[in-house]
Length: 429
Image (cartoon, rainbow, N blue to C red; front, side):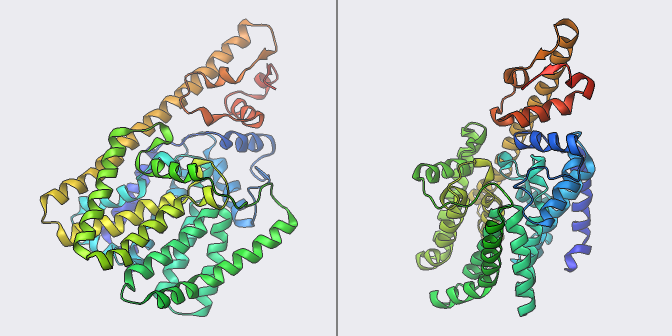
């Protein structure tokens, strides 16, 4: 934990303060519904009944989410980014990668960490307020992983189980991200062990957390505190769609340039690792690791039988896992190859190009929402009351069509832009 007082880490968190102030957040989809509940009942209400499955999740949403009411509130951003950055630092420290990149120049250290944290922003985990408040769960999962790798104790295993269970109830995929961390660690740092020994170690590290989650899930299912449940199902077309989500960034329509560059980089690194490690070691470690990553990103599609693409929490693992075990492997061991350096440069270019695209798209959407609000406000003066509001009155020139889905979200949008007296003059049911 000495890394917390390192000068470069301090500089990183100064940068975090700047990002928290400048980085825009956006309301889409369920955010409007959550805001509708806040405006009606205040922050101490159940924003959505199925969200609050345990007290920690209730606490994070009722304390953090209201701070996003003005769409640009630095404190909410700062708290969320702090958990996200700190969790990523602990992950890098556990995999013995952090010391490596701290020895590099400051610009490389900052650039690498930011690239690691922000890559694939198309999944909105760092853009959407109701997702950003899950970052405390992300931190707890990685902290549990860190503790059991640094210290051997049954009590820490129990603590990790508690942390992972809490992470599961923040968002289900965080628990499976924890399991993937364990798998990656065993594959990488115990590569010489046979398969049976690896399986025994994995069982030792995950059996208690799985029991905690299973028992809690049975209890909560019996109590029925929320409105959906896991369902086993497999839809092959959704699994194949996952590959396009990873490599072609099609969440905001396919970005062929950035997607193709990322895919070329992945393939090039895979080839070089295969050549450097040898076929036997590659199949025992990297290939198995890659398969596990791909399956993890499809967790919601396969296990939950759930097709909301924004919910792929395994994407976080793809982001830093691929870089840690591919990017750094090449950079620190074979960086004298100019071609390899060119490929490595493609990653920040992909991240930068796509992030700029996504942010511009969201800024355009936010401007469109505000213009539409002004148009409706002008109708209050020129048309007969009450003014009827259709969905397209709200969604005109908005590029991301899932911004409003149901009436509660529509109501939330109206409450965010109009005062109580104005709302009485609209008919938006």
